[in-house]
Image (tube, rainbow, N blue to C red; front, side, top):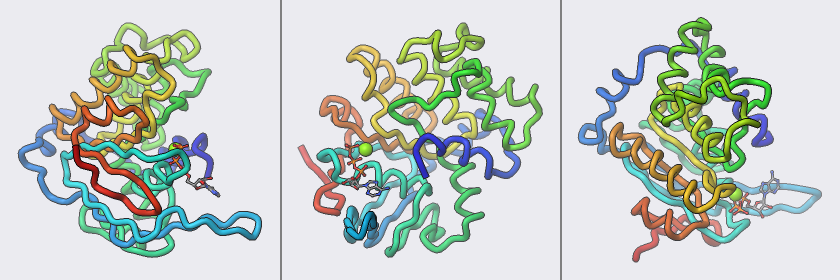
Length: 260
Ligand SMILES: Nc1ncnc2c1ncn2[C@@H]1O[C@H](COP(=O)(O)OP(=O)(O)OP(=O)(O)O)[C@@H](O)[C@H]1O
Ligand SMILES: [Mg+2]
């Protein structure tokens, strides 16, 4: 599956959504959520291409608590995106255990994985992946429409999410008329629209200048601090990685805890 196709697959497979962000905030407050949300045990992932095989993850292990935040760092090609795709249920490991909220997602049915992905996980990508012909508001509303919400309901929720990322006054703008930072904030609003418990971001500031990158990180950190969203950010930027606190390095197929 290409990254470009991910967003639509994510939203098309889901069941009906429900609730609102206030109820989400009540049930996910940071103080209440210190328990493992994600446990990877001995995860292996090998790509096979043209008769060659490349084992990118080799008995990788990782535990993330609900409400935690961390950076994933590592050399280009080390397997950071591969790891993130596994965490986001966009891909399946060939072996190992992957517990998400206590359920083994490595062995779960495609339907259970799709529902979990749809209801619990929000994605943010380096290149935004907004639909160019839709307004900011409709980009954010689209996943909710696929979940079965009425147009009015979806747009109301989308407006609320745009307000949370400070973009109420750009709701009717199309991506081409927004700055890079604004586009990324729309993408964050879209990721939030389904009220996920975890946000997975793959180099979300990679296409942005320093000041805008800081603004996007501020927005992501605020979501972690005020709503207890579990936050996993792949980044090459040491400064951003430091702000996240916990730092995990993908190296030689493993995930290593990095201190200092
Ligand atoms: N679908 C695929 N088929 C074959 N090989 C792949 C596939 N996806 C990734 N790879 C290879 O797996 C390795 C890890 O790729 P991955 O995209 O996870 O790295 P990364 O750490 O995210 O790199 P970057 O920092 O450049 O984004 C690379 O060598 C890449 O070429
Ligand atoms: Mg990558």
